[in-house]
Image (cartoon, rainbow over all chains, first blue to last red; front, top):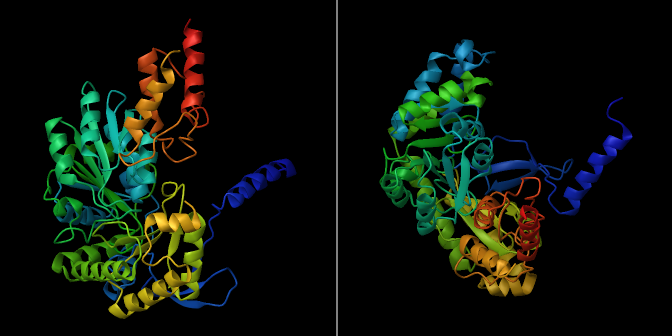
Length: 415
Length: 84
C-alpha cells in the first residue's frame, strides 16, 4: 500500500494547519437553481434554509434564465453532450466558431478563441505570445489565475502598485530594453469592485509601445453603456490588445472562457496555448447557452441597466445605514469590517437572518482589510435588497459598527 | 555593510508602501505582514542583485528570508561575502 499511515499523517498535519489558521474552506450545498432566492444546506446535514443570495457572480440573472435553459436543451438535443476530442483533432463544431464570432463582435476585437475556462485562458495566453526576452508588468491586485499564467511564462515579470499610473510608467521606462512589454490588469477588481484606469493605461501603452491585456471576467456583459466591458466604459474599445473573460459569471454562469483580441495574438494561442491544445473545449450544451446569452445582451441593455440601478440602490442603502464601504460604482460592494474574525461572525449572523454573504480576510484580501463582499444581480428585485438591507442593519446594530469609522471598528475588534 | 538597511528600507517604502502607510522599521514583517506579497517580491530581489552585483538563487530567496529589512540585509551580506 503506497498510501501508508506515515503519508496519511503528513497530509492530516497539513490539513490541521489549514484549519488552525482559520483558512479551511467548507462548501455550502445549494438545493435549488442559482438565483436571488436559494435553498441551502449548511452545515452539511442541516435542514434546508431559504436565503437571499448576495454573493454570486450571477450579475445579469441569466444563470437560470428560461431562454438560456431552453437553448441549452436544444443544443444538447441537436449537437449532443460531448466532443470526446480537443479542438484541433475533431472537437470543433460550427457553433464553437459561431460563438467566437459573436464574442469578437460583442467585445469589439479582431478574433476570439474559446477556452475551457478563463482560468485556462489566463494560464495559457502568456506563454503562447511572450518569450524570455519580454516582460510582463501586472497590477498588484490581479486575479490569481493571471498570476498563475504569469508564473508559467518564461518572460520576466514585474508589478506596479494597484492602479498607480505613475508607478506603471516608471516600470515601463525601467523595462524599455525588453523586446516586448505587456501590461496586465483586471478590468474590474473582484475583491474591491473598482475599475482599472484603462484609458490612462492604453495611453501609456501607446506611448511606450507596450501590449495591454485585460481580464474582463467581472465586467463582460454589464460594465459600459451596452455591457461590452471596462474598455467601453473607459472609451478605449479597439485599443485593448488582449481581453480574457469568462462565461462562468454574468454570461450565463456555467463555464468556459476566451482570449479575444488582435488576430495574430489569438492565432498564436490557437497554435501554442496548452490549455487549448490539450483539453476539450466547452461542451456544445454550454456553447448553445452562451450563444443565447449573447443574443439576449445584443438585443437589449435592459438587464445591465437594471443591475446598475440595483447596485446604486444597494450601495446607497448600506452607506446611509452607516457601513464603511469600498468606493466604487460596480455591482461588487464590499462592506469593510477590517478584522478577520468579525467578518466571519457577521457572515454567520447574516446567514441566521436569511442572507447569504461571505466574509473574506487575509490572504484573500490584504491584512487588516477583512470584509463582507456583497454582489448585486439583475435577478434581485427591490424587495430582496430591502430585506437584505434590513438584515444588514440588524446585524450591524448587534455588532455596534453602524456609523463607525475604520479606526473605531479597529479599536473595537482589532485589525 | 554601511547603509545597507537604509537602502533596503527606502526601496521597500517606495516600491510597496502607499503614501498613507505607517513607516517601516527593520523588523516589520513584510511578507507575513501582507506588505509585500511573494509574487511582487521579485522586483526587490532584482533590485538587490543589480545594486550589489550578486545572484540570489530562488531557493534562497524565500518569503521567510525576505520577511524583514533585517533578514534581507543578512541574506545580502551573506552573498556579498561569498562574492569576496
